Image 1 (cartoon, rainbow, N blue to C red):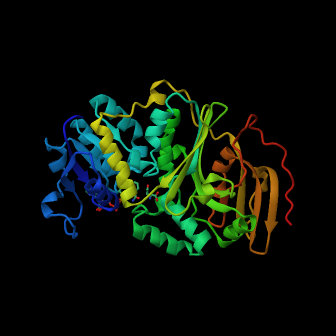
Image 2 (image 1 turned 90 degrees about the vertical axis):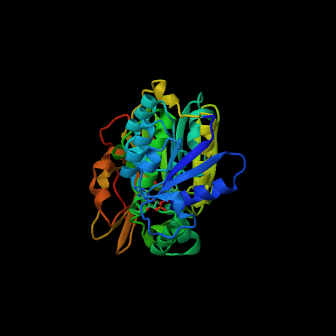
Image 3 (image 1 turned 180 degrees about the vertical axis):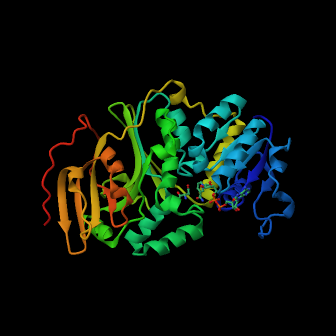
Length: 413
Ligand SMILES: NC(=O)C1=CN([C@@H]2O[C@H](COP(=O)(O)OP(=O)(O)OC[C@H]3O[C@@H](n4cnc5c(N)ncnc54)[C@H](O)[C@@H]3O)[C@@H](O)[C@H]2O)C=CC1
Ligand SMILES: N[C@@H](CC=O)C(=O)O
């Protein structure tokens, strides 16, 4: 795109205002905001009224606007906006991971059909430039795993709980007030938001398009003081970790809380920061960290995409287009801590090996090896008196034989 960038924005909330700020302060890029489509016309805003409209077609069918930037909090409305913009030959930049994950294949096809770029660096871990790195830097490397902290709000909450002794509800309220949390914060707390980001990462890491429903997510909604005490006694922190990893030529993926030891790079990733570990055959291991939520950091990722459009950058979905033949599997084992109430014991036959167990009058836990596929079918996931946390040194082992191995007796001490 050699001509000057004329922007039409959708949404002027946390990210929209961040983009406005960074555009005003940056040097070099020639981009001008022509119109901003908002939902609520009555809100007081710092810009002159002529910038704003509530009529989306004033942007979507405006011939002077060549780039649409979508930053609203409604995934379905966002999809309609993005689809129409692409169909009208307008390049699109979006921060909306839910919209992308829910409509990934349609969005991929729209880009091919209309030959217009759709860029979304801000959608996965905000200011960390992970998508373009997976596409470009790791073009010819052999990626083995990408995992890390993909959600700023839950990391902020966990940091406040572990470092500042602030309770969950207060920390969540703070994350909402600063603008880190989604409009529906259960998307953060129950790990849907990092799962949407993981769906995006999976496409650019392994060439795999998956529906969000196919990917497992378990958040920090059931975290109790018992779990926090257990972590503190062991010298661990708890972090919500998204992972995708090639195991025996299949891909294991999901989001679950994990106990993190001090020597793990994720241990010192605090507040709204995210951290991403990339493992590949040639680089072996690399680590990226940066702000994963917030107004200017996310605005900066959007700005970077707008800038990339000036040199005609588009995603080529290289791993997918090379014909990557990989699929998701649940057939792997993981070491899991399961905390439950003694009044309602769990079926310990689910574990092929129990490594640790404990019970007091109210609460009990076991740490043991569990088949992920059995876990997904079990009633453990529905119970509110239970919390699941991946053990600190757990590996993802492929299960060669699906027949449950002999169960070891549980010793409650
Ligand atoms: N807040 C953050 O740190 C980050 C947010 N994102 C994503 O960016 C998007 C925007 O997030 P925020 O700015 O935080 O949300 P926000 O709630 O602060 O702002 C969204 C704005 O969009 C407006 N809106 C809703 N529907 C609309 C429509 N049909 N037309 C025009 N305006 C409409 C709302 O009234 C609101 O003002 C979301 O998809 C979010 O997941 C991505 C990375 C980081
Ligand atoms: N709600 C999200 C915002 C950024 O993607 C988060 O907390 O990470």
